[in-house]
Amino acid sequence: MSEWRQFHSRAELDAALAAQLAAELRADLRAHPRSSIAVSGGSTPRNMFGALAAAELDWERVAITLVDERWVDPDDPDSNEALVRGCLLQARAAAADFVGLKTPGADCDAAVADVAARLEHLSRPFTAVVLGMGGDGHTASWFPQAHDLGMLLDPANPARVAATDPVTAPHPRMTLTLAAVLDSRHIHLHITGAGKRQVLEAAVDRGYPVASVLAQTRTPLTIWWAPDD
Image (cartoon, rainbow, N blue to C red; front, side, top):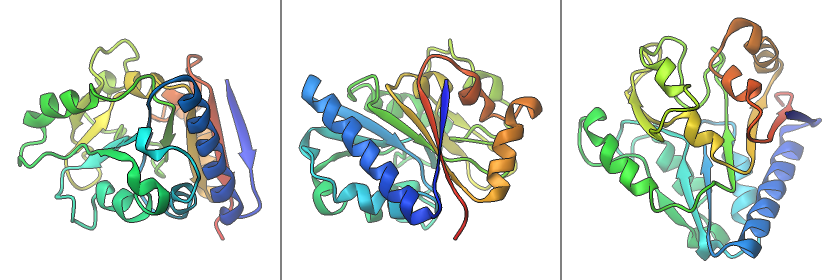
């Protein structure tokens, strides 16, 4: 159920993915009073966010949230919220509603109910979910060594958000579950470089967490790839 879209450069990919997301949001807003989108952090989407922020659409009716978040303050350099505020909630997209996954409390596990309540106000299904992928085959904060990985990847899990310890990466995390990611009209997997392409192509055979998105047949998946510049 997946489609590959390949580009000669990251700039070409960023422009095309931003245009696709804008088109999906416009289509959703023609049919519904509001729409919502979940995006990932990291360095890969930074320039794509800038292109999307300039898109002409009714941003006042759009809510943006995160696929996952490190349990750090929103002004911390490791914060995905800081990235989204600095790169996506700019230009025209500054009018969008942002729903973060970090609460003021120090305990990530204790905050799950509060974060879940925030997400209940979003229109569902998501118009789109934009995922990235790490070199270990994780996506969202579904890390291979996480003790609760089975729960996170259970498509029948009624929970839409969960706290998790990645074990192999810094910071506790708050993450959407697979069930929440699949509750979307479109899933876009945004990766660059030959190394990550090799990881992705081996993901199903090796049982990497990202394989849960590749193998599902519920939600259309598009893989966006370009070589590293």
